[in-house]
Amino acid sequence: MDDKEALRVGAAVRRRRRSLGLTLAAVAARSGLSVPFLSQIENERARPSTRSLERVADALETTPAALRAAADSARTVDVVRGDGDAGPPAPGARRVVRGGHQLGAKEYTGEQDTGREYQHRNDEIMYIADGAAEVEAEGRAYRLERGDTLYLSGGVRHRWRTTEPGTRILVVAVAEHIDATFDRDR
Image (cartoon, rainbow, N blue to C red):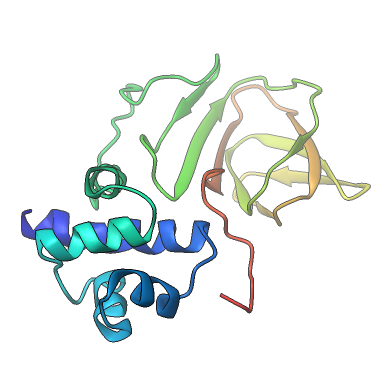
């Protein structure tokens, strides 16, 4: 495994451990590796050998290949060009972050009014790059104009629409596959 892949596998190990609700001590007991070493792997301060990664994967009920695949999707640098090379998710929208990263982002351009109510698992922000929009959230209406940002906690029901032609909105959210809810016991 090369250095860059080894560094990224730590985040994949941490995500998998947390998704199973396991502590570092539990993974240490299952794998036979020490808590400090596992912590160093997760915090990208140690590079696991092939055998150590196999032991960690077994403890996490997965495979080294699955951990590497999860790490591969977490590239540290990725440029998405303005010509929509990440592929459009819908008319008038384009992804500005591709792949299975921890953050997702989309740019919406032009008239947008689906009339649909949204409720996302994780937090998100909406930034008005140009134009204006109206957002209904928590029983209140908010008028947003160029340069305004709206923050929505995970679980808040909301709907939005643009109110001026040529409006551009950037929506950035913690990806749905990430459990970003705070749990003091983890």
